[in-house]
Length: 153
Image 1 (tube, helix red, strand yellow):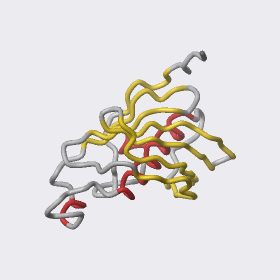
Image 2 (spheres, one colour):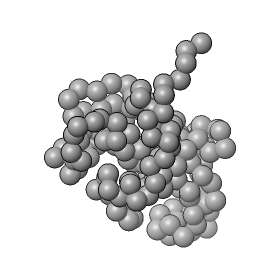
Image 3 (cartoon, helix red, strand yellow):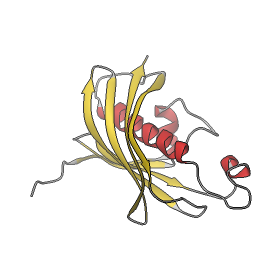
């Protein structure tokens, strides 16, 4: 059994996320990031509420949180982990999606759910990062994907 990597940041709250990522409403899709570890892993948190714009059309009679928004939130969580973890670099002006691989949606997410985006680094090359993410609600995996992103200045 291997020991967990030490925690570098216990909490990145919404104010720190706003200082870290360029995303804003309605496309900022995480509320906080917790337990960012030295091995470039961490957990993004999203509290899903019924009054979000996506539910106006997805679907008014039977609201389901869109899977593509979960994948975007995985990338945003990975962006926060990458930016906060690398010391001695200035905040990038943009974070761009590079890849989405092995994506699967397993269960619907409904208003009132809290999604945890469990992200772990798969690799890094200069300003490019790759992560595996498991989106969980109450401990059950609802979506998963490998995502890649590039940080730019």
